[in-house]
Amino acid sequence: MKLGLAALLCLSSLVWLSECTPPTCYSRALNLSKEIKTLLDKIHTFHRTKTCAEILPTIFLDVHNSCITTKLRDFLYVVLNHPNQYCREKPRMVLLKRKIQNLYSIITRICYRDLVFFTDDCQAIDTGNTRPYYAEDRLQLLQEER
Image (cartoon, rainbow, N blue to C red; front, side, top):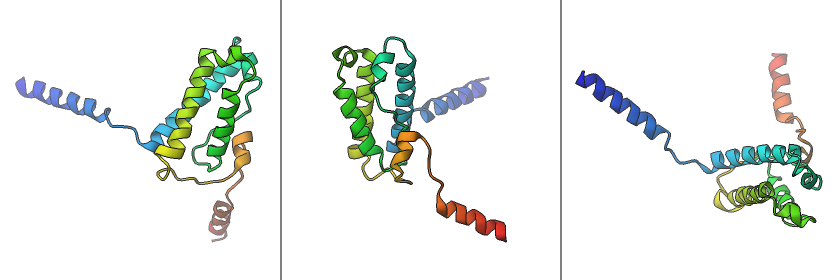
């Protein structure tokens, strides 16, 4: 009985410790970009902030795209200099500003050399459509020929 209780206690402490790992730069940037996406969806659909969202440019966050730094900077400029003072003071808009500032500082300062950019397609951040990778297409064609 005591052995089973000790094993259960040991197992539960291991599970608790495994959830306490600190986030890496990459995981924090990914999570923050997802939070920003959901917050933007809420701002665009909520009736009180829908008018504030009309001026915001569309942005599709991809932390693997090297153009994200310039697009985040431009987006942050629009949020900070919103023409309507009422919109600048809305809690969701303030939260959006803080999250974008955090993501921008994580990408440009904290994790400057840790993040790896796979693409430099700036239109993909604006439109959400990515260009196909030609190296992958050639590899697929080579495999099909064999």
